Structure formats: C-alpha cells, structure tokens
Amino acid sequence: MDLFLLGAGMGIVGGLLPNPLQMIALTQAALGRWGRALFVVIVPPTVTDGACLALTLLFFRLIPLGIVHYVAYVGGSVVTGFALYGLWNLRHKSQEEAAGAAAYTLAGVSVATLAEVSAPGTWIYWATIAGPILAEGRTRGYLHVVPFFAGSWVGYNGAALVSMCFMFWVAGLHKSLKRYLFLIANVLLLLMGISYFIRAYRR
Image 1: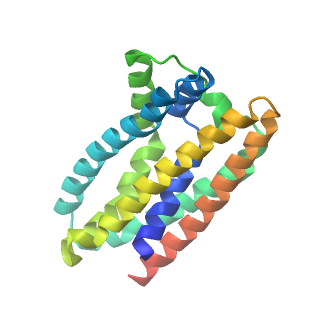
Image 2: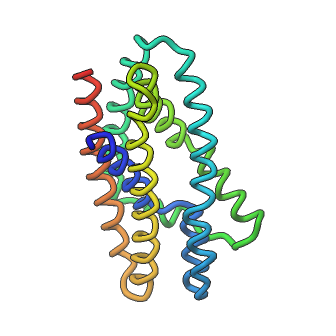
Image 3: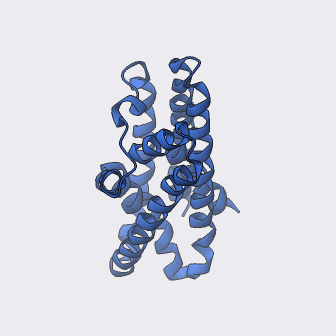
C-alpha cells in the first residue's frame, strides 16, 4: 500500500502541473471536443511512460544494487529541491503560461510529447525515483513494485483530468486561480520528496 500511495502522490503532482499536452487538450475542451481532449491527456503520456519504463528497467537490471541505494538518496533530495524551488518561484511566470497552446495535429501532439520526453524532470524522475523502485523488483519480485506504477498512472491521469477541467472552468473567471494548482502541486511534491528520502534512508 505504501508503494501505491507513493506512486499516486508522484503521479498527482505530475498531473496537476500543466504541460504542453494539457494545453492542447484544454484547447480541444474549449471547442467541445472532449474525446480528443481525453485522448491527448491520457494516451501519449501512457505510451511514453511505457517506453521510459522499459529503458529504466533495463538500466537498473545492469547496475549494482549498492549504487541504487545512493541513487534513491539523490532522488529524494532532487524532488525536495524541485518543490522548494517551485514554491519560491511561484510568484513569477507560471508553468501554464510558459507551456503555451498548440494545435491538435499529429505534428502538434508529437512535438508536445517530445517536449515532455526531453524535459530534464522526466529523466530525473525515471532515473532517481522510479529506477530505485524498479531495482527493488530484483530482490523482492517485480510484482512487488507494480502498485507504485499503477498508483502513478492512476494519480497522474486523474490529476491531469482534474487540472484540465479546473483550468477550463476558471478560464472565464480569474486566471490567478490557476496558481493554486501550482501551490498544491509543489506542496505535494515537497511532501513526496521528504517521504521518499526517508524511505531511502530506512532501506
């Protein structure tokens, strides 16, 4: 259960922070094309996460388990650092504004997906957070770590849908309300980072 909750927490943070794919989905929702919006929010991230999962699994099956312990420390420290930086930077330009909007085309969705895959945060997550969890599967069986990734998928997609609907709802009200998403996400990220760091220490 603790792995499921940890994965769900990480997923919720990722889903709450708007990204280029969510901006495309938001545009489609504004046009009343909710089917396309749901597709963009769920399918491309699931496909890319599957590819990242396979690569990370391969890598962490090759490196010594002793190194994995220290990688987990790095992961907890980095996540905590990102959260503190996000809270400090909240007064400045929001990530949602930086993401911008793109058209619903194959090229637009592909570029937005590649932007997510190439983002440093994606690889930091897979290398320092998900990787050590996967490494536990080498000693405790890979079924043991399935709840983490199931929780992450459920948390991410659920939060992404809530985030998109919230942004759609407040679009006609006041844009500053969207900042609450960043505040909530970064506070959650801080809690997840601390909890992951403690978990690495206890292993």
